[in-house]
Image 1: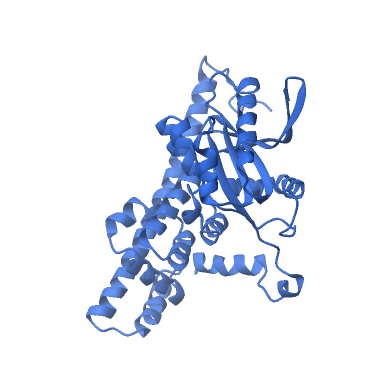
Image 2: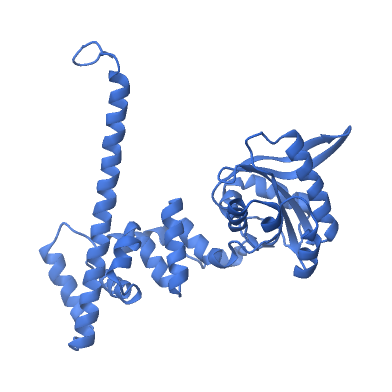
Length: 345
């Protein structure tokens, strides 16, 4: 198809057009974010006003219903002024008491995400942690809820490691925060007594959910990856590459409690990976032993003299909901419909 103006392109025009288009898209995105921030701040201010008038002037609960009715009649093209949503605004202002904090952090989140933070997270520090993570990684509402319900805040950075001794300070801190303990595999349709290869196969089959549980930055390389050392074949259970750490991550799965010899074997694997696979610009490879259980003191002793950076974490296999209970639970469609009402009322 010919260009409507049928003009020849001057030199450099194609590159310039690409740049202009990108700037327009960026401006559009900023406009959307700015509009969201203004709405969130407005919601907080309305919630604060309701709090102040109910607390200081003794207005009753029915003022919310009256306000909802008056606002919806005046702003018929706007959604969000239902009594239910006004009560969420009140809870919002009650939870976040300082306007600067709302402007700087919370206003960057969608309203539905804020509601979940208010409802599901009890402490200020934890709410702020989830809010910052949500903004950094661009979590959807479903992912945010999953991370909260799986207790990510309490698991992040909790693996037993020797990173502080085997890695430079900056990489050590980032690597420590990258690992968690325990890992929760609530998406596998296998029993709690599954064997290592069963778990490994199931994790790869559900690799998207597995990557979500591992956290941001992990890229899947393969399972049962062959290492040839001295004419002998060895196989890595799972191999990943971490984009922020810029290194390979070798994961060994154990369907039993941790044993000290597991650390020695993984140390050997890491040496082989660094010798045969690591690029000259890569950082030292990291190992993670995922085991069914562990004795903390035994794990710490096992890592004490290991020369490679290794972490040890537990995992939990949570079985699927029994079929006889599934019918009594709301469907995904019902849940989404309810949440949609919260956003658009």
